[in-house]
Amino acid sequence: MSLTPFPSSSGNSLSLDTRSLDKLKYASGTDQKSAIKDTAKQLESLFMQELMKSMRSTTMNSGMLENSGTEMGTNMLDSQRAQQMSGLPGGLSDMIIKQLQRQLGGAEASADTPISPFKGLGDLSIGKLSLPTNSSATAAIAPASAAGSASAASTRKLSNSEQFVRQHQADAKAAEAATGIPANHILGQAALESGWGKHQPKMADGSSSHNLFGIKANSSWTGKVAEVTTTEYIGGVARKVTAKFRAYDSYEDAFKDHAKLLSKSPRYSQTVAQADTAQGFARGLQKAGYATDPAYADKLTKVINTTLRLQRSVT
Image (cartoon, rainbow, N blue to C red; front, side, top):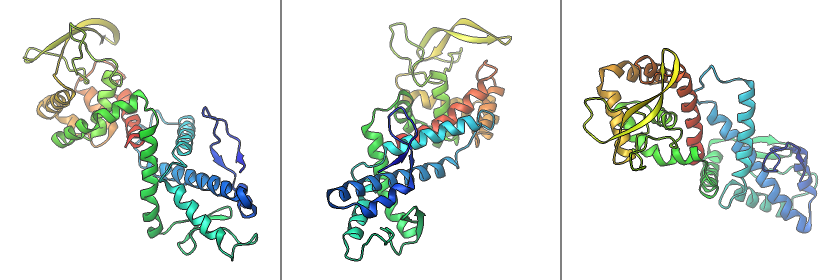
């Protein structure tokens, strides 16, 4: 099977040469089995790319940090992920293989007969091969495709940011229920404040404070405290200062305290009211003085959008 060359870090090609599908009709003997398997994997990859493209079209963008360059990089990443998630046991390719084997195994198949493994279900033509587009066919395909995606996420090694999302998304959901603020906004803020969990305030003995949100310990705080050196912007200039931060017994407690701070404090009432969009939430926090960094809103909006994308790869 020939693929249009497109270099990638994994060495896999990222796009399908539809002319390669014509070769399937002429494959015979032991070659036919291999040709069917390769074609099924390529078709599953195409389906996954279209699925990811459709999902990404509903994602909120910052509007400031998105451009043709970032769009190209995102499309390349989606294509690579689609390749990695294709051909897994129990996935869509297994269904396509069975359909092709039945079609090519019939007496009516010939070199002049177009290959239509989903005949009668409605066609979305790809070269000489057709895929289903009606609702009944889509309902049959989706579970298998989802199973393949879940299998890929469970077998490959997750990045640090993906591990962070998987570890804390349940607590973020609970915080959403308590505040009405979308879970991905809360998770994105935790990621920004803690550097995806790598830069949490440490206790005197080196243990974690579980403080993912950079909440400081003011005079009203009666719990444990972690005293560390941090960066503050004073008059627009970054300076190192020593500050006291709240410490918790667990990450769950950290999410609960953060939810309480945003929902109960009059200072953040406007933030909660504008939390229906990532940009509104981020700007509301900056305006309320959550952080002294003058670029905080832009940074947070970008991380929230990144969090949205990561959630798809780990769920």
